[in-house]
Image (cartoon, rainbow, N blue to C red; front, side):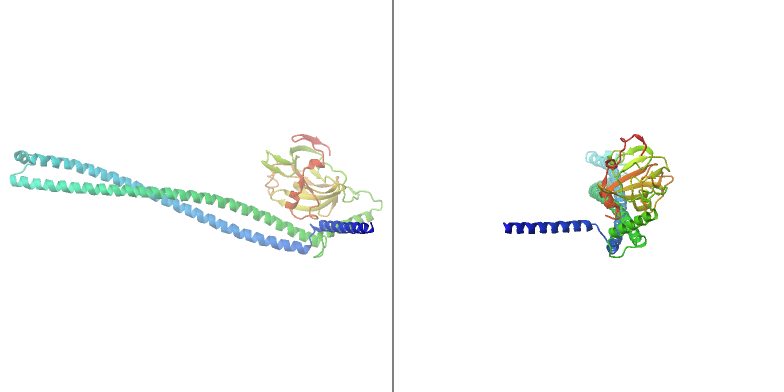
Length: 424
């Protein structure tokens, strides 16, 4: 019995050790230091360089394919001209053969008459005497033989020309097939170039994000090279909270007008006072693809509020797809979330700032004629997006944030798509 107890105790201890290890691993699986971020930046820059090299090579391949297609088109045109010339030559030879056959008929006719009535032939040929007649008859025979030989030669030339036409036609078919194959290859190269170009844009954006992150961690948060940046940011934010609480002895919460608040949230609110639900989260026929957030139709310049108390984790300015964007991290009893506000005309907060539902974080934009840099917007609206975890603390790239997306309706009450709402 004692043996069983000891064995059970050992198993419990081992289980706790395993659980502790898993907890420790889970808590640091996304952790990164500045040193690791710099290594990632170097890897991304190398990847970008290779992508640009591949892009140049593909552009060169496309140019070569276009040149080859141009050569083939020129050669096809030349073959067509040759075929046309041969057909004209065949037609001319045929006409000449026709004329010669008519001449042969006359000569043969005269020759046949000579065997039956020489006097008549003499009369017909207008010979002065019989000797002259014989001479003329001999000449007719020679002319007849010459015409026959010429006709045979012309027929031989016509046959050769027909063979050449068949060969050229086969060549033309072969060239057309090669042209089609090159066109298909050119299309593939075009798609490949588009993919490489898109990848380069994405990598360039990631490089920009990592550089901005490194700059923020070094200048704002003063993180050391080997320190876990998530821990560094948390320590900084906690120090800021303690400093603000110390400055306000009564405690309490501070809204945008002057009360203190801690970066935690219990309730979520709509980001605008009124508007229209233009597009839901998920696949929509309007976009023809998956929509990562919710579009709220509001006039240009509408105040945009934080949906809940939290900390501004990241701000992107004048992005080609999203314009000015603000990301706010929220710590709640049910988990951690990051809310994203896209297509802003202007931003009213700074990274590291603690905000509440009363804080105006910016003003809505999205008008192509005004926010000319924002190519992903077709009109005034706010794109609200949610992801689990804290962006720039649990993870550092937009792709990670997008991979954790979920419907805003899970936290905020919105009417059906196409409906207007008033009140937060």
